[in-house]
Length: 252
Image (cartoon, rainbow, N blue to C red):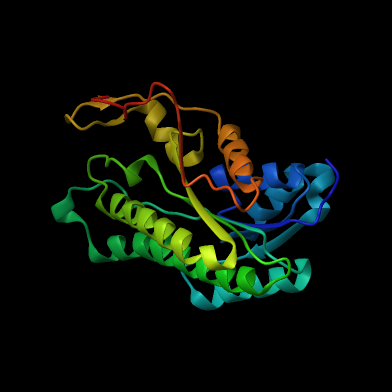
């Protein structure tokens, strides 16, 4: 598709769901700021876009650092002039351990990325979107199935993803007066490096270990693009996309 004027910022764009979304945006004609901690992985994402790679801006970023997030959005505005979409995707997890054995450091590391990082990125995007012409934009937060239902031994991840839902609702409300729409995509078992363990077998709620079905990550990119391409007077408040047979609905 021919290039158009829209600009997207994708965090965690070097791997997995972030890469899939970034490629979907690039292939649809967006100019895209690719943010993530590792420059080489961001460059790999851009290279996979092939002919669309010239519309990719690589900005190595640690979203847990306020100064890094400020620099990301300043560079994006300078190079690409505006921000129409933020896919607030960057996230991390702690190794599954018994709750009573969870260290403060592991807890804080997940909170810093999954919650504080999303807040910082959303705030910078919000500030740009309310002032630009034409005004407004869309923020899409990456929640998780864990924003609804926990896995065993997952307190940091589950707590932050529940908090993301609160952030999504608040941004959706506070953004109305500026034509800023905010929605959340909750993804279950996409094929990414982080879900490799699910194919081998992971702990279930009843204490057993079971393999779980996964789905191609490209479907996540398509879903994010669908949300992004709606007019600003229409919003997907929450979308759940998941492997059909993963243990989530009902009793698994």
